[in-house]
Length: 146
Image (cartoon, rainbow, N blue to C red; front, side, top):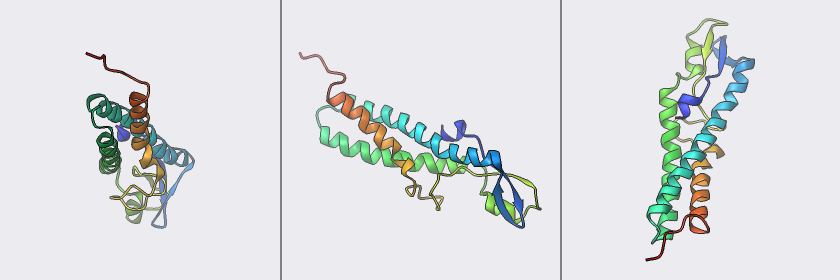
């Protein structure tokens, strides 16, 4: 979902290096913002479903949703990165000067393509899951007593 709502930043090559253009600077920030929004909504849904159907073991639900949320963030980042355009730094090395290049899908603060947790945006699924769990356990949906 993250890759579908994201607009790729644009830039150009200059002497084998990639530089973002003005529009690309704005769109570069959008990748982290969209990751946060999609992760937050996904976390709310994931946490809500987990808390709704497993009400007998709240501690188990808490541990499960936190682990699940971090796995969700990692999978979302890796899949989005794989589906997105290639690394613009690699493309710039083989492209002529001022050739337009589309940047890859990445998060601010992340330097490795396999470890996204350098960005605080990866906490969004966990925060969303905790919001829904707290809402369900402490005042949200109640089951009728039999």
